[in-house]
Length: 357
Image (cartoon, rainbow, N blue to C red; front, side, top):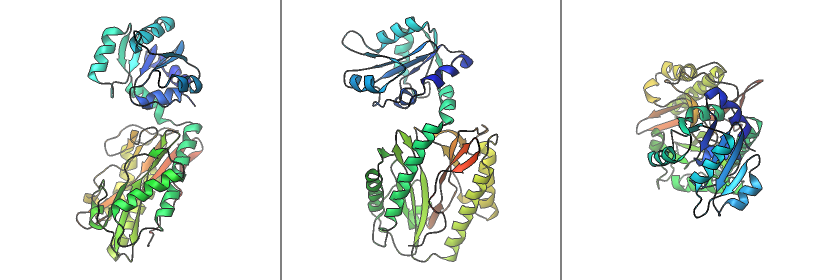
């Protein structure tokens, strides 16, 4: 799976002859070939595509990269030399670069040595990656199925006395056993009073009876991320805990209902936020409703009070409202929702009714 053609078709509209891809996620997006860090460079132009790497990856690149000319760096011929040859062959004079991630030092080196003008292009790449195709959707759904299988298993293992760290470790183990390549991010597991911290780091604190446990986690499959959150109760919850949980669930459903092509992040966020505010917990929901994801765990556009970008068909955005009562407990529920040609579809199938263990 590669996106050379999709990128190339977008170049003229952006006033570009080509785009230089040095970051590993955008290289993978273009070529479908995974290599670590700075170990590769791709150049997509209106006249052809090029992929350059070193001896550690050349054999794999030759097997896996299609629709591109491939070259290997060696002593005396590094990336700059290969790129200038490609620029001459393609006639590209004005090329985009990843302005949001390229270091100042790398930009200066390319600016001084490449025979082309460098133009910021991160916004272009964000826009292309935001609209997922069927192949990307399939990988993200598989990543989500793996995460849900792991959650189903871990729920049989959570009991009083088990620590947050143990739950986090077992979640990761189960996801790897079920087929994950790696984690989307370090899992968040927060029990009882730690749950009031939205991005709490798992500790050695044992889970106790009568408290919530919030688990926010996901995994990578085929290069693409999943992300979900469920809050469960170990033992009987109080009436207030049940009320807060139901409020968060209603808020999430309102956000999902509002999510549609043409709606802005502000509008979708407000649909969920209003439910929490009307229930009297507005001050305890401090973060945005959700974010896009794909090759990265956080992408654009977002469902937030500041995002005026309209959503489009092909977007996949998390819906994850929460209420966090300092020093007491917190609740968050998170699904991934896809805007398809025939309507929206929740990619998260795991039940959301309050689970009592």
